Image 1 (spheres, rainbow, N blue to C red):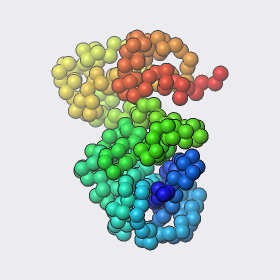
Image 2: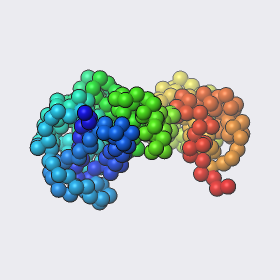
Image 3: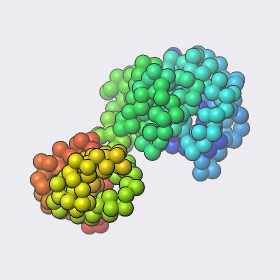
Length: 320
């Protein structure tokens, strides 16, 4: 029997959140010769516009969708937070989730699942830009911001936008095994298992500016001079403070220790050098203040979850 996949959208949804999983299941349907049936629903039937204006024709509104359902997938989008305040939409999502073998969300669709109470006591992920907000708004959810997708029992959540493809491939692998999912991935020219996590796509230096002007100036100095002596004693002298007082004040005002800030700043410099230059790794390590390629590798694995070489292969932008 075909596995029935129900995809939930709404006005302002992210088109790729729908198209990515739908194409994966459609490709898997071809490979399995009839393994999946994809349906699209929304709060209202009729044309539903994605956030950039492309319209999708929805034949059946949420309230008329019945069970049983194999997999319920809720898309994300710029208007997710608005729909997360609509009790009727949330009630229908809960009803359909109860009729489904498993429930999933793509990107900020996790906010709809969380608002409906479906993620309480669960591990989940979402787009890195709003991961902190998901955890703050729904403290009952354990948010893992670096994950591409997470399975917690019958609940699956994914990172932003194109990660819906990763999620759908994982669902196909769960149904039919990794070899069949690999064939689908090859046909779509995508990774079956994307290397690394969301960190490689996020902005590494998302640290608030200190309130103290002298610390803001010091922060700018660190970012502009990655190869300088940026030890705590040297930074404390530059700030005119004792080491202990400097460490306490810097941590209090930025939310991170001086040493960790310096390492992240140097990693960010190395990231930019890998993107825009052809420098060998030993030069990248020296110019970013990390010293040796071995240190560069360890820092990249710690902060970006990929090796420097893998990062350069995916994000290098220098024209040849």
